[in-house]
Length: 438
Image (cartoon, rainbow, N blue to C red; front, side, top):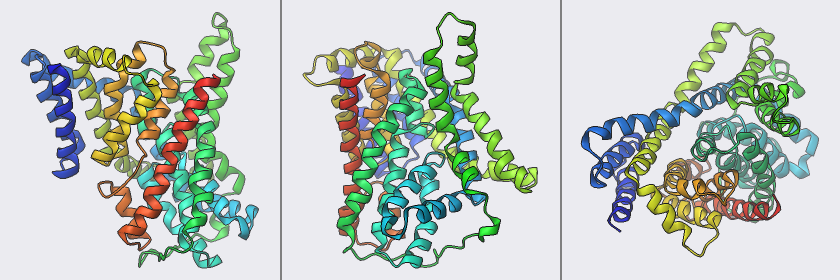
C-alpha cells in the first residue's frame, strides 16, 4: 500500500506546485518524479537516467508531429487562409446559421492550430463577424471555441492526444478517425445548441481587439485554404484506411506503413502548405521560415510539459508501482474507459491544465492498457474527454475567455465552464458507444 500512498502524495504535490505555487509544469514534473523515485526505493544513481529516458522517449515519438503541426497552423493564419475559411463558411451557411458556420470554422481552423494560439487568432474573426451581423457575442463565440476545444482534447496532431497515442502505443490514424466520430456530436451539443441559451448574457469585445482583416484580393482561394488546413486529417485518415485494405504480407504493406506514419504525413502536409500558401503566393522563403520559427516558440513550453510527464511515467514503470496500480484498477467494478475519464476529471479539476491532467492520468493508467482488454485508441479519447471537464478558475483558458469577452466570473462559469463540461460528457458517451460498436 505504501507505493500507492507515495503516488497519491506525488499527485497532490504536483497539483500544489502547478496550481498554487505557479511552478512551471516541467520543473514540477521533474521535482515530483525525482522525489517519488527516491521514496519508491529506486537506487539514487538510476534516478537521473530514468528521468532522461522518460523525457527522451516521450518527446522522441511526437516532437516532429507537434512542431510541424504548429508551423502549419501558423502559416494557415498568417497567409489569410483562416480568414478565408471563416468568410467562405459564413457566406455558404447564411446569416441565420452563423452559429453553425462558426462551429464549422472553429473545427476546421482548430485541427491544425493549437488551442492557446488558435483562441487568440480566432477571436478577431469572431469580433469582426459580431460587428458585421450585430448578433449576441456568445452565440457566435461559443460554437467556434467549443469546436476548437473538441479538437484540442480529442484529435491528433494536438499535443495531448498525440502524446497519449504515444503512451498507449495506439494508432494515430484510427484515433483521429474515432475522434472525428465523437467530435461532431460533441461540438454540436456544446456549440450551436448550447449557445442558444447564452443570448441573454451580456458580453463585449475586449478593448483594442478590433479585427484588422486582409482585403479579399490578398486572401488565398477558398478551396486551397480549406484543403490545406484539413490536409493532415485527410492524409492520416486516408492512409490509415488504405493500410487496412492492404494484406500484411504484401509488398505494398511496407510502403503503406511508411506513408501513413504521422511524421511523414505532417511533413507532406507542411510542404504542400509551404508551396500553396507561402512560395506559391509570392512570399519569400525567408518570410515563411520566420513564420515557422515563431510557431516553434508558440509550442516550446507545451513540449517541455509533455517531456516532463514522460519522466513521471518512467519512474512509475521502473519502480514497479505501475504494475501495482494496474492490478488495483483492474479489480475495480468500473469500465476501464469510465475509470480513465474519472481519474482524469479529478486531476483536471485539481490542476487546471487539460494537458497536464491528461498526461498525468496516462502515466497512472498505462498498465491498464498494457494488460489488454481495452482499445488503446478509445483510452486516448476517454482521457482526452476527461481532460476537458469543468474548466474553472485554476485554468488559464477560463480567464482568457472571461477577459476577451468582458464577462463576470459568474457568467463565465455559466457559459465557458458549462460548455467544457458538455464537451467532456459528450466525449465520454461517444467513447462508450464506440466501445460497443468496434
